[in-house]
Structures are given as structure tokens and as C-alpha cells.
Length: 309
Image (cartoon, rainbow, N blue to C red; front, side, top):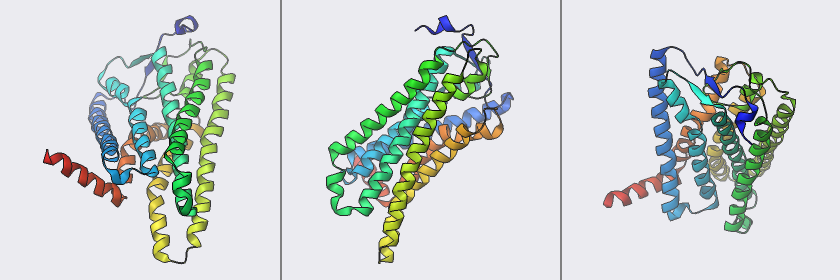
């Protein structure tokens, strides 16, 4: 379906984070450094998990996919943000905008599913350790990851399909640095009720659904840990969950603030969006490396091996 047949507006103007050229220059340097560190951190995690046999376990298999997702998630928005910070004409085509919406939905939704799968992995490891190898086999892990990607693709598809039929003939300005579906609704002169209902239902089912599954998993985990007689065992069990819990709080905290508040272009809205699309992909590899002795040891082994060459 040609987008041009449904739009009298062919491009949007992304107002971004600031109109001050000096501030834009500073933001460009800041976000460029963050993006390069994000690429380096997540690629390092992928390399270390791939090459170090000590990390060939279900938990790190899921973590490698989380690192790949963070690369995709950040790359869906940050390159365009950097381009617009240097450009006088801060525009994006309607097709490019909808493509960005789709990829943000797809990668963000997959990350929500993957964090849920990782919570289930911790539940099995702590609550049913004797059956861990059987329950979290390689085949099952692969199916869980594939299901996360497929479910999120379908979620993104059913949201973007009605959005492609919207006519945009009002203000071209988006009070944001990237395209997100809630920001497009005020710009449409078509009836957006169908798109809004689909967005609301999918956000509740996908966002709240995965969140409640994580909460349920951790309720069972905490119950099991508290029933342990050994204090050292309780401490070790809690430490294996701390990195994942931190990642969950970062992701879902910013997600709920962004999608449950009205679209207004307010500073809080922009800051929240920056956190989950720019900062969180940088922090995830740091969280899992700095708080995990296995990963730190694997990083040292990997770099020692490559330095020998």
C-alpha cells in the first residue's frame, strides 16, 4: 500500500530536544559518545559470551540476545537523532517515521518478552535447580527466544497497519526527537480511534502482561529464597537476580511513564524517552558486567586471549 496515496503531508519535522545551536552541538557530542559506548559495550558482551565456554549457559544465551536487541533498539532512533542535531532541516519522511515506529515497537516488545523469559530462567534455577538442565534445554531456550521475536513482530505489525492508513494533514511538527505512535495521533485528520484502541490493548497485554509474569516469577523466587536455612545461600540466590532486576526496573519504569502519560513534549516525557531509547541500552551491559563476577572474569580471559595474537 503506497503511503503517498494516504498522506497530504510527506514529511514531519522533529523538534528534538533543544532549538539552541550551542546546546545541540553539546548534545550531539554527548549522544555520539553514548551511542559509541553502547555499540562497544554490547558488541563486547556478544563477543565474550560467544567465545567463552564458561558462559555457554541459558542465562548468558538470553543475555546475548538482550545485547543484540539493545544494539537494534538504540540504532532505531539514535542515528536519526544525531543527524538532526547537526542538520538545519530536521525532517523525516512519513514512510521513514512509520518504519521507525515499527522497529521501536518490534525491538522494545522483544526486549519485554526476553526480560520475562530471563525471569522464568531465574525461577527455574532457584526454585527447581534439580530440573534446570532438563527444563532449560537448548531447544527450549531457542523456542523461547524465537517466540519472543515472533510475538513482538506481530504486535508491531498490528499497530503499524492501521497507522499506515492515517491521513496526515495537520501540523507537521512532532514535539520529540524520534517517531513514536502516540506522537502521530494529534497530527492526523483521520479517525485515530481504531489505532488508539489497538495501541492501548497491545500495550496492556504486552507491557502489563509481561510485567506481571516477571512479578509472579519473582514472588515465587523470593518465597523460595526466604525459606532457605543458609544465609550465604540466600545471599548468593539474591545476587544472581540483582542484575536482571535492575534491568527490569530501568526498562519498565521508563516504559510505563512514557506510555501512560499524555503526549505533550514535556521535559519529563523527553527525558524518559532518552532514558529507555538511549541510556538503557548503554547501561544493560554495564549492569551485567559490573555486578557479575563470571562476566568480569570472562571479559578478562577473552581480552588476554586476543592480546596474545
